Length: 267
Image (cartoon, rainbow, N blue to C red; front, side, top):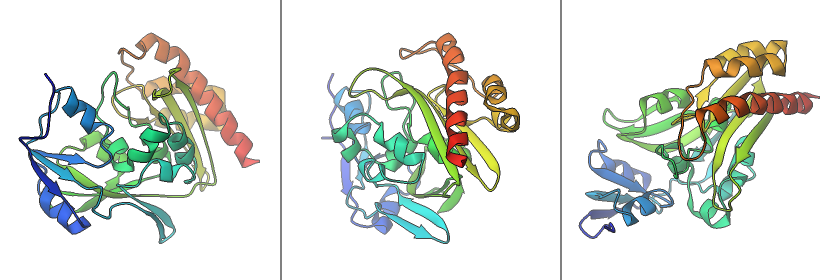
C-alpha cells in the first residue's frame, strides 16, 4: 500500500528557532530536508508520519569558519560539499548522482537509517576522521558532542543543527561501490592526519560508521599492520549488498590503500 503525508500535520519552519520549537523532544516528528531518504519510505508505505517538519527553508544550510573550525549547517546539500575539506569533499562527490546530491543534506546523511537499499551515511566515516562535533536540539535542550558519541547513541529524538570539523594536515579515502548510477558505496575507509595523530574510520561494514582505534595504533608500523588490525573494531554484517565474508576480505585492502594514499599526501 502506498503511503502519503495527507493525514500528517505539516509544519514548514522558516528559521532555526522555529525548527527547534516545532521539533520539541522529537516525539512523533518526521524531519524532512532534502527528502531523498524520507520520501521513498513514505511512498512505499514503510513510514507514516504523524507530524512532518520541513526544514529546507529554516536557514540551516551554509558553510562558515569559526574559531579555526569549519561549521556546516545540517541543511547543506551534498552538492555544496563537493569542494569541502578532504576527505569530506571526496565522499560527497561520490554519492549517487547529481540529482540526489542536489537534494540530499549533510544532516540527512548523518542520520541515515541502516537498510539494505538505503544510503548508509556515506559521509559518516569522513566526519569521524575530521573530529566532527555535532550540535543538535531535542529533549534536554541543545548540546554539542563528538560525532562518534552521536552515532553511538543514535539520532532519534535529536534535530541536527550543524556539524563542525577540523581541517587535517593530510587526508585520503578508499572505497568499493556498486556499478549503478544511483548506488551508494558498499564500504568506505577514510583516513586523516592532524597534529601527528592518524585517525581511521570505516563506513558500510555495519549500520553506522566506526573508528578503528586498533588500526590507528598499528598504523605507526605501516599500512599493512593497520590493515591486519582493522577487523578488531568492526562488526561485519551480511545484507543484500554484500556478505560479511566479502567485507572481511575487502576491508583490509581499503585500509592499506587509504593509508598509502595518506602517506603520499604527507610528502
